[in-house]
Length: 180
Image (cartoon, rainbow, N blue to C red; front, side, top):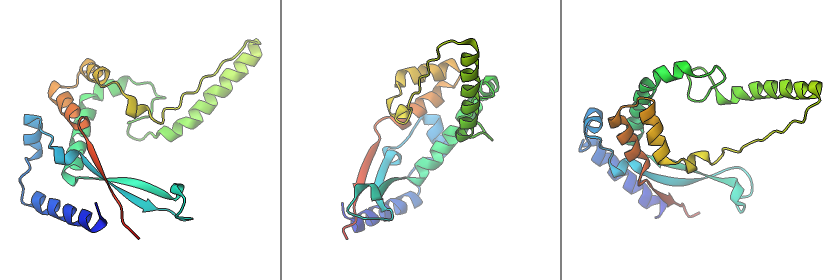
């Protein structure tokens, strides 16, 4: 699809959305509706500095529908509320998805803990084995059935779990290019 065609398609979508055929957020929640249009991602290539003949000087971003992003935010906030009691039971070291904590801050914690473990291993003259796991692609490999079981286990309402399931299944992406 050409760049101009993409702009026209996005403009039409905005016109359709502004006329209001989509349900309200509360109707979507009540009837567990997540329209397919909200799941469509449009991948656009952006250039970085450097030689444009080299692939690493490009990056892609995925443009998602605004109503879909708004609805996803509502789902996230409701999920946080549903898991509030669980968050209170998390260890202090757990930083992911917690307000006021950053995963990057955990690097200092890991370094501190590793230093203590190495010192203790040297002090006790015992062997030390360390295993590091690269979680870069972890979210691409989540076993969905296990995820639904965990959400139920932690008391997430069935309606919310069903909506999350609908959000993450049957997504589609289109790639757009702009010819120079």
